[in-house]
Length: 124
Image (tube, rainbow, N blue to C red; front, side):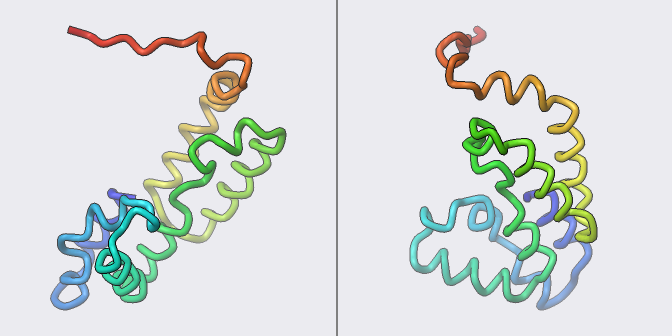
C-alpha cells in the first residue's frame, strides 16, 4: 500500500498531490482504528484518487492469514490475484508473486496443528 502511495505522490502534482501528503498512516491503518477525523481524511483521499482507492480495497487479500486456515485459502488468494489483473498496481503484483512462490510454507505455518511449534528468537 505504501509503495502505491509513493508512486501516486510522485505521479501527481499540485492540489491532487496535496491530498496524499501526510496520509501515510491513515492509509496503513485499519479503518476501525482511525479517529473520526482520520476516517474523514481517508474518505476524502480515497474519493480524490482512484488508484489509491483500488489499492486500499485490495490491501488485505488474506485477512491476516485467517483465510489460509480455511480450506478455501488458495481460492481466496487466486481470486484476489485475479482481481489485480487490470489494476496496474505493480507492488501488489510483486507481492502476489512472492506469496505464490511461498504458498506451501505459508499454508503449512498457518495450520492450527503447527501453532506453538515455532518460536521467535530475539537477536542480540
